[in-house]
Amino acid sequence: MKHFFKRCPKSNRIVGFNYSNKLFWVISPIVAILAFLWFLIRVIPKPQRATYPCQRLAMSLFGGFFAYLAGSTAIGLLLGKAKQRLSEKRISTALLCLLTMGLTVSLLVNQQTPAATVFNPPDGRNQPMGIGQGIHPGRVAFVRDERAVTYKDGTGNWWDDENTNPEVVDRLFTDSLLQLTGESTDQKAWSALFCHFNKKKNGKETDYQSGEKIVIKLNQNQDDGTGWTTDHMTSPQLLDALLADLTKVVGIAPSDITLIDASRNFSDCIYQRITTKFPGVRMVAQNRIKPQRDTDHPICFSGDNIPTGYVPKDYADATYMINIGLFRVHNLYGVTFCAKNHFGSVDFDNENKGKFLPTPMHNSAYNGYDAYSPLTDLIAHELIGGKTMLYLVDAMYTSNMQNYPVVTKMETFDGKTPCGIFASQDPVAIESVCLDFIAAEPTLSVMKAAGNPDNFLHEAANLKNPPSKTVYNPNQNGKIPVSLGVHEHWNNPIDRQYSGNLGYSGGIELVMVDHSPKQYSVTIDTLTLNGSEFADKKEIIGRGTLQGKVSCANLSGLSFSPVLFVSLLSEGKQTELKMIRFPLISPGETATQSSFQLPITNSGQLILYVWEGFSMKPMQNPMYWEIK
View 1: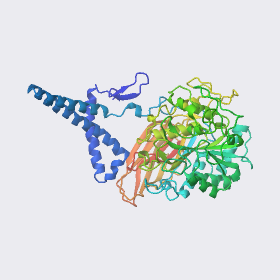
View 2: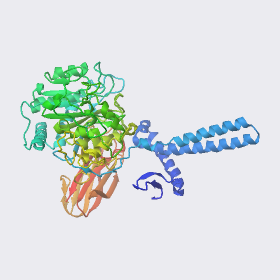
View 3: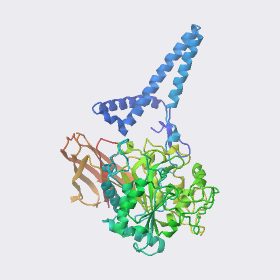
């Protein structure tokens, strides 16, 4: 099969099909016909399956082939007609046939998706760079529940409690902290976050102290102060959950908490909600408490002739910062999560002085790879990244541009919104993970942007020796850390595995928990090696033949035949894979004791997961065992 594809001579990556290979023209029709038959078998009994990602893939396979076949046939017929009309000296009719044939050829040539619309990172997959940050270095937690969002386009307001469930969001927020820190209670989680931050910053492992101020940076980019529309902004329910924890669990006085977006506004719909529920909390914006610049800690940008900037004084007054970014595409920088959130944090000495507008930084959006990025300067600044103890990305909804309405359906989430929260202590890792999720979604395109969405992550991960060779020194103190965090891309959009998930050290670890109602439940009946039972344990010790029996219960309202995947990893590479199909299971019934055997010859990881047949996301709540 190596001659079936064209490869880049430098990187050896696959860049397209080798149309000159005869094998391509033999296999392509077979694949297209099989895809068409599979589509009919799956979609005729249940038409809504046509929207599933796997069926869209099938449609692209047979649709392109049949379009090519029909187009080629039409071209042949038109060419024959043109020759006939020329022989009959009917010139005008012959020209019309040739013109129609030309249009058909043009449609066939242009039906392919341009390569520029596909995000193809140059650093490849599972190639970590930089140094992970946090209690668990490089960890990113993603917790979701489809019950959090019931909003449908055109029915009410997405930000109302009837459409975004505050109780579910509160549970998700708490669990995101627990998954991030590894603690058992929200109080212990917050204590761990404060202690780790202070240990790193001051060398003293101290918890929050009464009177210390905390500032929370929001992204209100579309809030003009006159009221909200369907545009994407911070979910009020997430703010409720965060502020409730800070005031009740941590014990911070409301007057020591500041919500801020210095360049934008807080409309009444969010302002009245927060000030009523949490009286005393400060809200700094262009139409509320007016932001004032701090001149004692300027940001000296390291490239692109960007002038010196100044952050709000609230940043200087605070001991801690929490950065809440949004999960969406941006037309200049590709995406806007936590780093881009701070484009509204800098004021310049120009005609917009006092408005904290990022205009001088916009030209850098056109920079390619291995080039300077002001986003890296922002993360490295002592009053921005230097004070941030927690990074959150509000993924209750998404949007396919910063000034577009919320998106309520994503193919990679089975036609739902993301319905979740990303959390990390690593500013580079959380951006990397969110980028992978956005780039994998076919209804969104990070490549409509001017620049490259992960160039600044390469720079930040290698801050002291970046690819651009820029000397990043935004604080003008010469203290440049080796790295601001760890960056890598996952292995693929199906498994979503980073180095930390594959057993390697030094990369990102993605902890995913989906609390959505399950379609099935899996029970490990037995898991034995050399007579020892390991079903209820986290480690498997020994070498030999591992034997297992698994039951699967159908919790959905439809009959289905799930497939059990049993994967064995050694040194991060898959060495064994077993696929066991259960018989057809009716709703409410359980198929019992599907068996498997695997040879255990090296240390590594055992992973069990189920593809229930409803989506292209088999890694639903995988079960792990470390092999010692």
